[in-house]
Length: 340
Image (cartoon, rainbow, N blue to C red; front, side, top):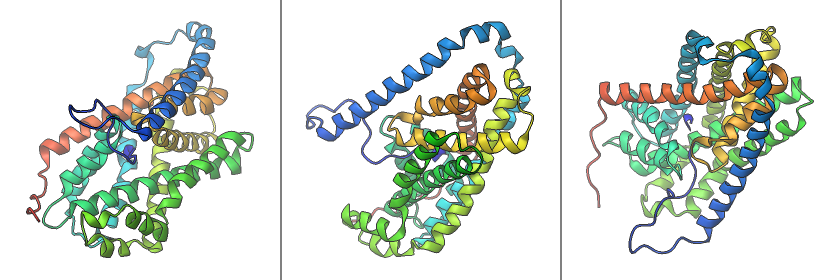
């Protein structure tokens, strides 16, 4: 998702020579993405254009940013992603696998980089390829990725909707959006429904043992996942709060943590979930639009716009740096023996 940004379907891109023409599903997805991007770009441009005078008045310069707070924001993001990594490993264990700790962490964080590729299926490919071994089946690992990712998005939506409903009732539209997104991501993770989806997709053709593995997905497992993800989203909210603290335009308005941190946490959750379900690589555009929409009224256009851009840069930099360290410094598991 975090990392975390998995979507069903094969990656988009140029069709290889001799392949079949793109079908209706591809063009529907393409149209949806185009409409979302157009609307989001229009909304962001309207806000940015209206903030030109304020940018000039405040004399904003990147040199005035507090890079200590930006470092803290990146660290909080990586730590906030760890509960999702723990839940992915716990899901693998519940499905009868025996993943080693370090290779699992390595696969999880490196897999985040796949979300920057159109189609987002590379997240599944990277994580599965890096974690599979004699103790971890590739098909089960891929199935666990979907359980973890959808659970994370569902919890993010519920956390955002709950905070907005309790403390920010004037934000009725974002609250409704958060609830809808949470339902879209969360309903498929209900164990009875998820088992039916796996059977409908006939995953057992690739691995007949998947039928037994998915029996390990129960409500106790999902409850533990919701608790872990709630902790993770709280830390990601703190990451966005730290990003705002790095922005001089926001510091003067960050005076009440009991107001600021819940609102910012809701903003982080809703932004990530909207970006994930937008079908756009890494949620580029929708995530920034949500942050700007929620933060500009509270902290001003300069703080809202700058923090949206900074959060993107900080999280991506943290992912790239940590993934590089894990790729070089941690050995992967031994490859699973060939079957068939």
